[in-house]
Amino acid sequence: MINRLKSQVSNFLRIRPEDNVAPAVAREFKHNVLYNTADVSFFVFADAFVSLGTIMTVFTATLTDSPFIIGLVPAILWATWYLPQIFFTGIVSRQRMKLPFTLKMGAVERIPYIFMPILALLIPHITRQTAIALLLGLMVLRGLGGGFTALPWQELMATIIPISHRGRFWGASRVFVQAMGVIGSVIATVVLGKFMYPYNYAIAFSIAIVAQWISFYLISKTREPEPEHWQEPAATQKMLDFPMFRQILKRDKNFVLYMVARSISFLGGTATTFLAVYGIRRFGLGDSQAAVFSGIIFFTGIVIYAYLGGLTDKIGPKRIVVFSLICLAASLTLTVLSPNIWVFYAVFILQGIYGAGLNMGDMMLVMELGEESLRPTYLGLARTMTGVVLFVVSVSGGLIVEKLGFNFMFWLATAMTLVSVVLFSMVKDRPRNLVNRVKALEAIEPGSDS
Image (cartoon, rainbow, N blue to C red; front, side, top):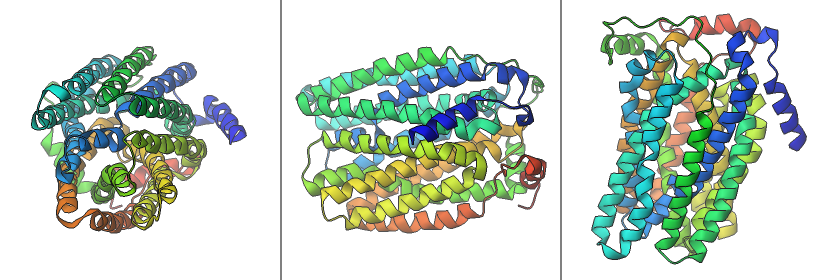
């Protein structure tokens, strides 16, 4: 794996003439790869202490036994992350340079985390109902902050990382990113196990804050190239261009198919919210086990990203998404069938494969579904419209667990994940063969029947 990673790093840092990369982008490519890899590494290190699928759900479970409330926390966070993005399509399109606006939103994103250790310290002095209300409020602010940042950050990444190198960039850089996640998970395991509740969570959340602001400093060092063919949108263009939205949805059937497939896949993804809580309750484990689960996911990601980077550039992100969803279905099935904790660990290995594949594949796939000039609009539409579905299924997931039990939820999620696999198989992305790239662009342009 190490030799493969070295080869991958060497290959993706080299830009060849046939890659057809703008000179300004090529000139700053190595610098931007270094600083943005370090940026995401520290952000993921921070996430090891505030992970939504493990740490935060277990933290919520210390305040309530209600599956509905436990499921509501990620539902609120993801909904508030997805839903605002459509409102930023016009704003981002008007930004000649994407970095300044990304930094402004990145600062806003990090502010809610400052209050999380304060909440933990308040737990002995307030009622559980008050603590839950404050937690839900912080999840709203945390989600909105991330949603405000997501679109400009994705557009910045699409600007500084050429399409010919995106798969290898995400693959090679995420190996280092996941390694930081493993380190963070080890530290989180020690912190959560050594210190008394709720001070253990206060310390963990505080470490996350420090790492996030280091991440902010690193992304501020990005060197964004001057755009070559940028034109300022007409002054009459609306922030929310509903006629354009309707035209895209009416004409681009491939994009609509993607959104249907992604929406259905959310039910499977929502079930992962309950994996850590389910495992801890079923096998009688301590809260620190949540950090162990995170560590397994991060460590698995190191291996998977090392292999998927170059592969994605060869076969395209759609196939990576399909593969990741098959792993999700397998992990949900194994969740129900695991006879002991040692087999249950394999659930999180599969989760690591699923998370790495979906993270890289889906992000790249959305960037390729429309023409370059409309990329912010496609990104905003894809995130916001599917975000509505995500909120509904996330809330429904908690209700299903409360009324029908964990096992029913896991089997239902498995079935819906397999349906999404079939639909994603029909989505078209851009073939990686340079000779056929022009034909591929024509095949997925809005207005095609694909």
